[in-house]
Image (cartoon, rainbow, N blue to C red):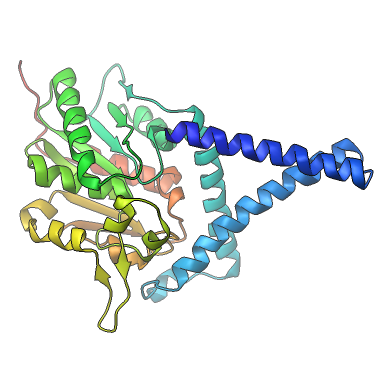
Length: 316
């Protein structure tokens, strides 16, 4: 579904470019090469404005930025361009055309990994991370979570089936799960429904563990479940998030590694990604979509996967 939506959006953009170029050539008598170049640049500019607007919205409710992570205008431009590039690559290339299921190195290292994408994405989002994992000889599998706008709880069964199949096919009794954004919450929903027996470690990237204000702009029950609302006495997470946390404890959170950026443009407040009792790894000057594409984050994820103690493999 997500791949089809991305392809449809690309088609609409292509038609718009042709229409704009046709108007410039037919009405203003521009040459077709010049008209097409202008129309193409205009489409890119619209996408850039959308990406930049997310930073503006996130700034309204952002968490206090530690002094050591403050950046200047030039670094902010690099941050914005990096997030724009990641968004364009994901929505216009990897998600519509680079979906995958499973990649198994000849001699795998460590436990197998299940990749769980976030809201509005599919397995193609993990294209860059998959390269890093494969180069590190880590066996991994990705899932596509649909419907797009259902309850996060409904994804638990999909994750359960994928983990059981991955364990069965690799001979391991446990896996490492890596979830981006909403995917991290889906992993927690899986643990609530099926327990944590199969999970050796859960790595989350930019996951709104306590909600995000930008979820109010989303569509679907899952976005309502991820909401964070400002209040006089501090922010308030959604009922679903509070109920999820009420059934968890230190034993669960010890399994988690939460990786997040202080400049996330979708998760706001950014410290919503901090999970008490988990290992929290901070980055800065990286946008939300760019997290899984950033080489520094990829290297950290590989390190956390290979650092899992007590690898277990079944003899069946």
